Length: 523
Image 1 (cartoon, rainbow, N blue to C red):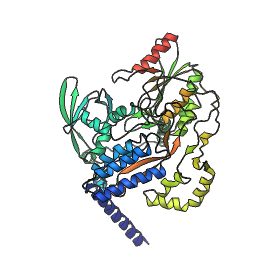
Image 2: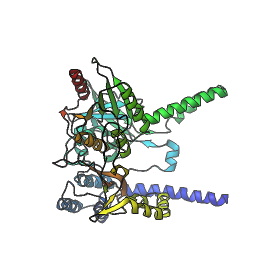
Image 3: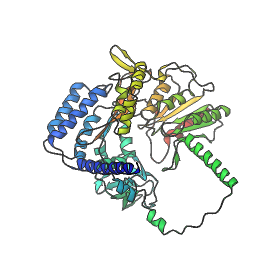
């Protein structure tokens, strides 16, 4: 039995190594014209089959023409990365930010991971921000102290930053016709976009400008095991014995820390919290509550909102600032929870989710990349079929998926009734925009900043599938549901507009300062 197990394990290991090698060779080679044509047809077929509103912002004739022009432009074999550069602008022309493609990256073999550890791209330790067509280091999470926050990135491996930004802007899109999303997104994601579009290298030469000084530095890709060599030369002192009582105290303390970090959504790499709440001290007698939500994703949110609004209630606070700047979205359940604390009326949060076919929501399960996922979908297919029978209903031939948020919902018993100010910008996207739509439509809040990158009238999201193009191995992310609040405006295709327009500045928080000054005037 043990022998058979070892043989099976060896076979799986060899197949895994072979698979990684084959994959890396596949994405590195030049693909024939026929292979590229096949990938283009595959892309358009999947979009037409699965996308619930493909022609929302582009006509079928226009998209057909773009696909045809792309096919005609392939006159010689190309690599996966070169094909990605041509395909991405066509997919971006759909003008729906959740629908996007990503270039394939070389995989590490198990031997490489064992030797060096998992590889990270060179810019991972840096956070970026943009202003006036320039890119600056916002934060440095790494150990290289010469990469100073506030420094401008002038070039990377002799490619000018402005040229790179103009190139990146063609590869992605926000929702609809807004012009605020892409400038913000391409600047803040400068490092990851560079990694997706360039050859993987262990070092990159970066030219920076700090005040009046221009200098060059290398940034390096990191490996999770790169410091193990240093550990061998470290003298390890014998561990001190601890009592049973001390161990119990330590376990209890660690449990409390984990609970706190989960509630606030702690990011151990960035060493910051996803959710923040505080009372702002100012020279006014009014109490100002400030809630910064970086995304509606990480950690457990229910305890956070329960605790925060309990504090607001106890303080008899009449001014709440909700900061959604840079919030790219996340869970529908979380924004529903938050909204239930800031409305005093019954509400329906979203309408039924439109799909292309009754079984569309099962597509990710039956087309999972792992054999474990596929096997599980097949085994539970009878239950999944029964589930979809109750969850999906057709209206005039169009299938709609029923969500629990389609029903009439009650606000919290201690719902906040004071004044709300919402800070928004181009990177307020997806779930941030759905929440903002409710607050805007019900005239519940005053919006300050820039137009959101997500559209007022909804988005394509809910459930996603990742498709791999057969030859180039490019990945396409595709939303399977049309999610929208029960409110619409005309003209369609624009985000939530601010009541007070303020263009963000890198070195000072003009939006927050405006709110505090306005509260001071009113009091």
